[in-house]
Image (cartoon, rainbow, N blue to C red; front, side, top):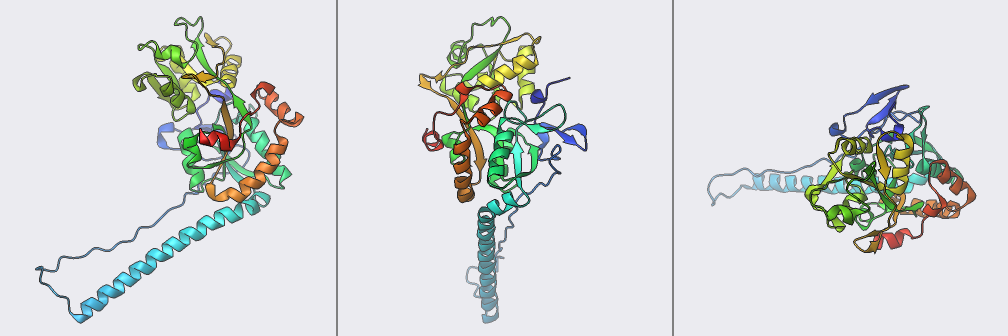
Length: 353
């Protein structure tokens, strides 16, 4: 049986049976294990506009009745446009002001990317992982809860939280300046080193991104849109030699099939793969920090809408008090992380680059 964390994020529980969603068809947001049913909530916007008919020659002059009709039409369009703008502003305000009420009432809708150790379905169909347990604990301290959670493709996480499809991303998402421009991150819950997953015996002698870049015939795999793609580019690996893959199951399969020569993932990710697939003919390289001569310790945090700043401030107050406590460390160790992977930088610092 394939380990849970190696399943595509398109796998999900449906009334106790495992179903599979084609990753090419779009994100999966529910059904959500034992936490609830799917409630895809996308915000839509209507467009209004007016077309002007050609009325003959350039010397055409409308009569008084036509002029009044045009003015009425313009006023109607202006009022409609203003109304839509006010409605959008009102909705945005409601999202921001109501998140605390929602958290302490019906609970928050959570998106996760199915990958250990951060968020994944265990053998009994329950959602677990470091991010899930930390989020649940912090929300409980705030008097809140998780109402609904669903596996979502990596590329749909940020767009989904921005549009209000869900309230928070719990996916071990690394804090980067590019992502900070789109969402508001909580303070980090971990800081981890980089590592490469390799074929057993490491026939190409690979140790980091630069070692892959040194041989133009070698290809590196990474999850599409993940920080590892940016690290690979920083290290000088040609884009044509970076194979972006939809999920970790595909990455492991590509490595075993020889389509790629190394798979870029975090140090905890490598440990999880090797523990789950001890006889797969794979090995992990030594963890490393430097990329292109600059230290890169990837820090993960929860992602929220920027309009939810007040809620995030309250959330951070509880989160910062929790991170580093024996209870937090116990959650990390339970899912294969160590005290060496506690955060060492703040979100403000990480967003600056």
